[in-house]
Length: 499
Ligand code: ADP
Image 1 (tube, rainbow, N blue to C red):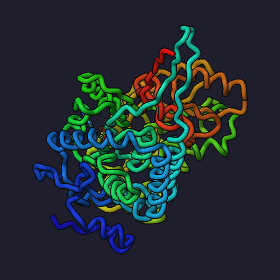
Image 2: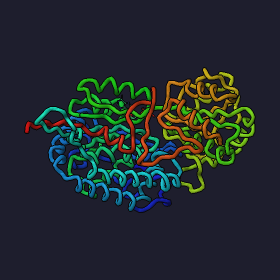
Image 3: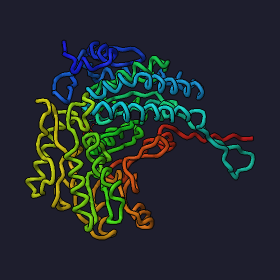
């Protein structure tokens, strides 16, 4: 298939070279290879809707081959010393940093996000994550246990679980690679990476860098393909020891069931409908940009987006007016244009889903404070939506209850702390929450009351490799980042010695 490279004159020569070499292959046992069936799929460029690249799609027989190679590789990889694993992870981080521009361009073209965000957030945070986990291999320790049986020595060994399948979403493709592969590799596992079919490309470039860094054959494999084909085969495979997944709650549920065959371990980071709570004593000047940024950043395509804004009555009108004003000033456009604040949504299917929710909100009687129409001046065929704010909603409306995963905010008023805690928790999700108040006791009280894996007080969207992130309730279980994530990629062996 001959494809025209979009925005070619704005791209780094290496990006053009990368996109020119197609179809993109699978990485199996350290070799780039087509799928056995020769089957491919196409990924689109979201600002035009036009095809961007053709990619080989892994079928179950490719998954079988990959798992067999990864299992064989694991037997050698587990003997590689912790220090050598550290060196490899550091080298990989250095290479990602060195190729930041190309990785950012690939991410922008495939996902739609503004190039500035890809370059200043996605890529550097990926580098930082790999550096953080590069520090771990030499610090993973077992312990000697104070057992009370005479003449017995008991100690623990921490061992990698084996072959890990990582299934990731399309909203932050590169960052998600680092969240999963950082701890999995640091712990000494072999990893089979299954990116989202909407954004397969940065993973290909990433794997080219991993080979350059010197990771042994079969330690990192790449299987692009559809969730229900490639992903499902990986999850059901008896040779896979663990699945680390980030994606929708619906697919998380399927994965948990499908993993039951060999009782593989599962960690699931799923959807959210996070409350963003602003009390009337808050520092509004700081809170307002965060309230807007938490839902309109990445076009709302974040599992932890602050999608439900709850504002205390006295300042409600002032806050919502200011957030609407911020929305009005967001420049919606092509990701490759440096002036763009918000790019298109990532896929046509998702565009249709988000616009459907906007219609549903209106049909249910919610009033539109801002947006709910196609932005002007954007390319035809692109998946663009305006930042949208709904008001006068009730807590049972679909736009209030369900994850939209787009730049759609519902704003409501509240009066008391007890009321807001109850309403904030009135959701099947429990990923994150934001609280703005100058009252320190109220802040801590609410942090304790909120059923969410992360609570941000007087800030939002703070991430650090050392701080664990994950869900309560149907937002999943298990944690990404921190030593908490590392634990999930390790087994504990208890060794008894008769003295
Ligand atoms: P979204 O709804 O945001 O697209 P999904 O949960 O559908 O998120 O997708 C997240 C990841 O899960 C993607 O890599 C996708 O290919 C994969 N996936 C989808 N369905 C399945 C499935 N049945 N089994 C395994 N992986 C799947």
